[in-house]
Amino acid sequence: MVTLTMHLRTAVVLFAISSASGESTTCASFGVNEIMQGPCDDLRDKTKPWPVVARFQGKVSWAIELPVTSGGPSFALCDEADSLLRFWWPTYLSPAVLNPMFLKEVSLAPFAAPVGAVLSGGKVYVACFGAGVEPHGTSGIVVVDLATMSVEAHHNFDNDGGVSHIHNVFAFQVDGKTEIFAATIGNPWTTPPVTGSGLMRLDTATGKFDDSYTTEKLSVRSAAQQSDGNVFVLTQEPAGKATMLARLEPKGGKFVVAARIMLPSRSAGDGGADVFVGHDLDTLFASDRGAGPGVKGMIYYYTYSNGKFTKLAGHETGTNPRYTTMLANGDIAACNQDDSTIQVFQGLANNPTATSVKETVVPSIKTVSFLIQSTKLQLPSIGV
Image (cartoon, rainbow, N blue to C red; front, side, top):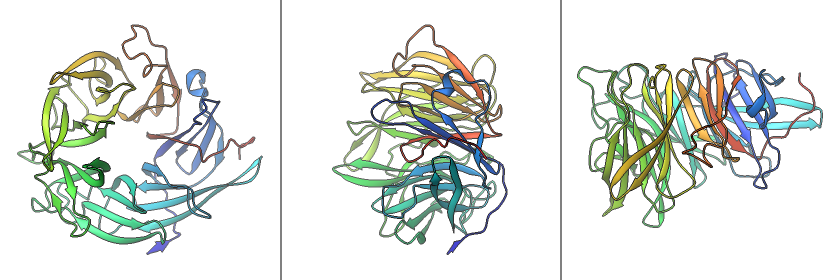
């Protein structure tokens, strides 16, 4: 069912709008009832938040860009608080006037707390974390048809009786075709904690999750596939336990754990957040919450060779880096959720072992949580 009801919640998402030519780009941030927007280059030297260019309501924890279609939406947004998938059209009335939004909201009930999404084959697959310590019928994958913007299926994750949580969903290439994989962190909050089943292949015909697809138990929170088909995953472990980084290799219809390494110890926070590949094969970045000398967070740079990981660099973030990513210009940007700041490590992706990296910290809206790059937003000349 599609509704147009708005709900007030606290959250923010930052869109980094870039062009393949490397020209100056536009960024937009989403927060409490409003959208802020400005040049992406501002992240390198700006000391004040961007101006507000539009206002809306909601809590967005993830966003994906949608393909160009005539009259179709440009983005799908996960509203974690209200368990909605929002389709969004950024509409410009003139070079100086921005229509705040056109939104259609799709209820994901009875599933709750969408925290990730991916587009594949004209469908948006939405990962729902679930409600409560044990989700019991509220965690799984919701399939939303892009053409009709309506729910096509609910795939309940109850392989262990509804105790564990799904935390994201990915479309990876395996044996020449696209497969949908759900990442499960298990349940680090129960006593004793439940270890996740790694990346589980979703059978889109039956709605069943193959919890044996990854050959070893892993509490996967984030995953990234590189060009050779191999996958790096980062875990979220119980309180006080070190985060794990692992390499998965597709073999014989399974993901085989080829290597693993524990990140440096942490004394606070939720641990692993994001993993993403670097410019070169077998290079990657991994972020860890509650780590580092200030017990705030860290972004680490690793390489993989001959069956082993090697940590070559690390940089301290602000408190609770909820999401970290690479921008088109080679900057690494971290959303420090508890500080409400965006921290930029200038050119770090281009020179990941540099001994001196210029950093900037830009104030943002409360609970900054996500960044995405797109070419589908323009820079209006005035705020509202």
